[in-house]
Image (cartoon, rainbow, N blue to C red; front, side):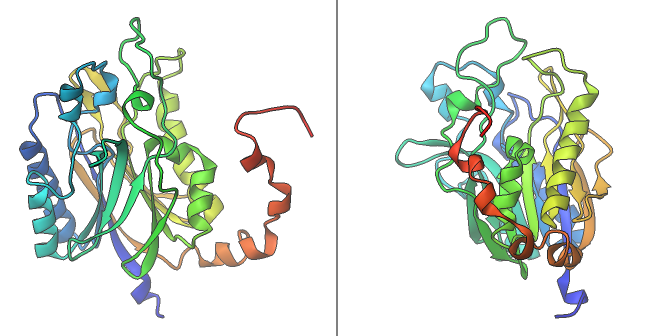
Length: 311
């Protein structure tokens, strides 16, 4: 296979604020516009953020189940999101999309899907590393209730075959955990795509504001380098009804280098023609798993959840 056959146009579609009053139709119109821009810039795949279709509702304490359910999708695609699928099929471009999923069995998940150029869903992921809390923090400036509103993902970390490569998915907080990337790279992923909604302030302790962007990029870069894969991360950012989230949507190479990054806190498309062969030398040498990994010495990783006594 030639190098030219291993190139992919990867687009990251960062989204500015989505407010409580914004309709799904208005949001999908923005998504379609960014999809068209990405295609005009020779993209093959577009990555949209986590919970793309609504405001980041886990920041609110919601007691009425009927009100909560309004933020969830009971089918995918549905009448609201169908225009995005139709446009993707027309343009011949794939996409990754995050949304809140309510299953026919009444289960709630923070979900993402991978859609191919024919608008067929070829992969689904349900978020595993749910951050936040379940109780009402009445003194906090906002809530972080993912643990209350979602179940832990039940399908594990999976890799999908698409666009002549293997693509893994994760969501937001997953990107901070090294196990996420390792599980995907052990399944031969060459690209990991993810969406996120990250607040610029921390309700748990007085953390310096600059740490948010630093830790975000550090997580992407270390995950990419230590697993010899590309990472594409799309954020929803800016001030949603007074609640600010970081931008910093980025494409990171297997070298750990940031090759493209957003410059705004608005709707913005960044594109890079990525070389999927770039990670080959790393996989054959520094991170040749078959040659160098020693899983017999890693048992604590799966045997313990929290830190315990030294062995």
